[in-house]
Image (cartoon, rainbow, N blue to C red; front, side, top):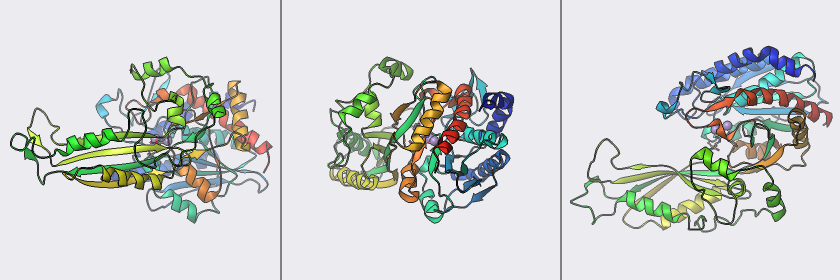
Length: 456
Ligand code: BES
Ligand code: MN
Ligand code: MN
């Protein structure tokens, strides 16, 4: 692939211009008012993939946001690669913390700043350009299918059913995804694990109306106080989640694998510095990378109730709310955990409050073995570009549809992502370094090359 570097060099600016067009569409899946933007964004993806050389691309309806499906079928004897990405993004709030508007991409200090710059427009887009290069230079030796969805950031509620109904269409030998990260710009990384998750919203109701906190305070249970206490009880002093049965199906990772994990380059000092924290916290007996990679976690994602406006208001609130999530590991089943939590949380509530729990979404964890042929192809591709063997890492993040793909389509996914922890995905000032962007486009074609060489 002699001319690959040159191809990227010659088309650098056009690549950026095209990506920026994609980013300018605020395709926020969690907000119904952006429904039109979802279609606009899907259209843009369709155009990009067709321009890249696909035989056909179409926008297909689901029960929720549409998906983009595209393909280039060259030869039935070639292996088939299914590229998965998501065109939806997280909300941009809090807007006042952005240095430049979230949907007006801007390059500063060698990084693209915008919502979706990394997750997953920047990363997904790299695949259209790698594909374009292979098609235009006649070097593609795989059949390629694209599946780009618009609901990943809300848990992909419609995609499992779409997969069930389109098994033949989506048939492939491997799924390739760039929606994860690397340890550092010079440390190529392949993600071998994703955590599962459960997400709930809890509502506690105390008295039937907000009360005067002087007239009633001390005599009536305050649902916010109660909620705070219940939440505190969920994790003990050793960082163990207290829900009975929670750990029953957790696979304990062997000492051998833990020793291998410990070899991955990591500096606790730098990690703390990057987050401005003096001390880290988590489950006793596990390192930071183990806490995110092989152990479950429990977090309050939001909490509200009572008076939060300007100044003081002496009120004993009627209601308290929290958004709660738990990250899971193999072989925990998200539906079973959802039930266990609900049962436990209800059981620890005092009679002074009523508890109402909504189970919002969930997904299973995923694991990719390092002896999978497609993993080997990704490994060789990274070696080619970075001159070193990539490090296998179990990520703390989740992409629930990846384990659904395995269950429904019977196909494994290789997670070859190029994001960095500093990219601030889901946060204000999300960014994606140009170096990661171009290195990604430089690496992906080699994946196809080596995967094709392995044959069907
Ligand atoms: N791309 C991320 C997940 C990710 C990021 C995995 C970095 C590994 C490394 C994805 O878009 C994401 O944000 N997933 C959500 C899933 C949820 C909304 C169901 C997550 O992990 O919170
Ligand atoms: Mn993503
Ligand atoms: Mn995301």
